[in-house]
Amino acid sequence: MTKKLATRMSNLGTETAFEILAKAKQLERSGRDIVHLGIGEPDFDTPAHIREAAKKALDDSFTHYGPSAGLPEAREAIARHQTKRQGYEIGPERIVVTPGGKPIMFFTILALVDEGDEVLYPNPGFPIYESMIRFVGGVPVPTRLYEENGFSVDVEEIRKKITKRTKLIILNSPSNPCGSVIPDSDLKEIAKIAVAADVTVMSDEIYKDFYFEGSHTSISRFPGMKERTVILDGFSKSYAMTGWRLGYGVLPEFMVEGVTKLMTNSVSCTSSFSQIAAIKALDSSQQPVLDMVAEFHKRRKLIVEGLNSIKGISCVMPKGAFYVFPNIRGTGMKSKEFAERVLTEAGVATVHGTSFGEFGEGYARLSFANSQANITKALGRIEEFLARR
Image 1 (tube, rainbow, N blue to C red):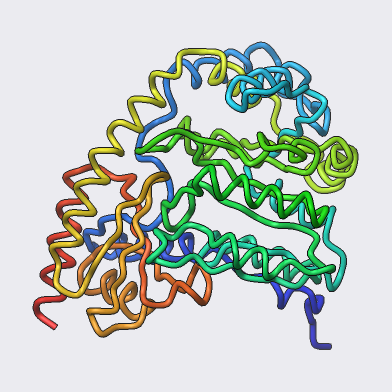
Image 2: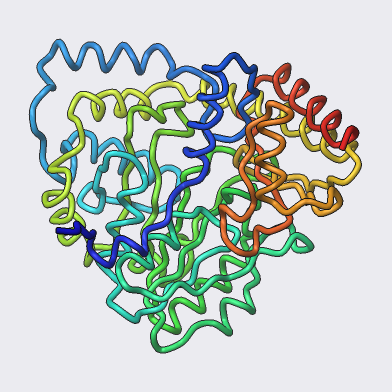
């Protein structure tokens, strides 16, 4: 008897950065020296006071099930944090704590999108958006990010692509993979579009602390948007807590019960001791976050100037996150070939642009969440590789 997976499994994509990480680790095990500019993970350790809070929580018996929506004290801490950041009152009843940020993507799409419903999403963009839209039977509608526009959204393209079937608009600012930021004026216009069409917006704000120019504005601040915006956020990036798997959503009231049920039906709850550590992260000094962003600011300049000095590559300056998305068309290689050869022949892990959608062809994503010394080494290797081709 032939075993077959459900048909919907063929709609699932993947996150190529993890595949590249596995291949790079395999090369390292064979004795190769690899510079990792592929995975989007801060190279800083979780601050000591957060780690200590988790250890104490374990000793204090926070080792049991908690409510599916999150521990009350954690939801309250997140609500205080978001109220301060967003500039308007957010109650804990709107918070759902999840094991990582991805569940908020999945649960939002699963809760809102019926078969045949359309979802606008950025392309190039985080690959799980499109993957989840397809998985639930929705229709992914890409909104292209153009290099000549600094990889920001095109408001008029969003306006033109809204139809009666549009159920959700996904925004990501600062952006993965491009490091672009949506200007306040454009957010205001997108808000008007969403309100007029009665469409929910999922605003992926996981990189809200990583600004090198200006500061973060959420689309939820604009008229009519508090009740129709899902804010996706978490602890992975800002507090260097990727392995902790700790995220959350700030949800419109009409979605809280449904998303909580999805938590109950999937993972039951988020680990209790990690939520206690999250409270410490939010309620303590934010200096470690500021220090990390300051270091990334230096790395941004280093990597952009270095890439622009390499023949065949050009790179716009990102305004946020910790990625660059250089144009590599001048090398004569397609994105996938470039990434594969740079890894195997130069020992530098990057991610090919088409990992982030069809409009990523001709580009590569490099993370500068690595030391200045390693970035310099990687740039030298890429330049040498291209010179000897």
